[in-house]
Length: 95
Image (cartoon, rainbow, N blue to C red; front, side, top):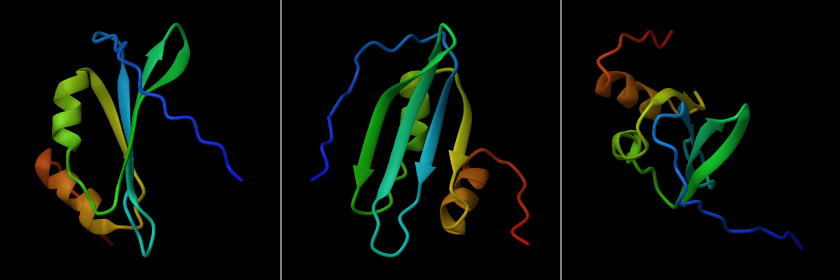
């Protein structure tokens, strides 16, 4: 039996550097987004969301938390990272 603690902090420090990690769903797995912030040299998870289907709330999260410096995406699902590249008007090469 696996124990999972649900935790969501409301203490987001807006000027701190933040990053988003995205695990696109593949096969029977779920789509997940994790937001972190760096505080006093420690990484804090400030949000972790799981969805049954791909959810493109990345821009909303980026605006909500502010100072998002990096977005990390599992490259196994090209539709997700290509959509993000288009959203941020960045070039990409899928070869």
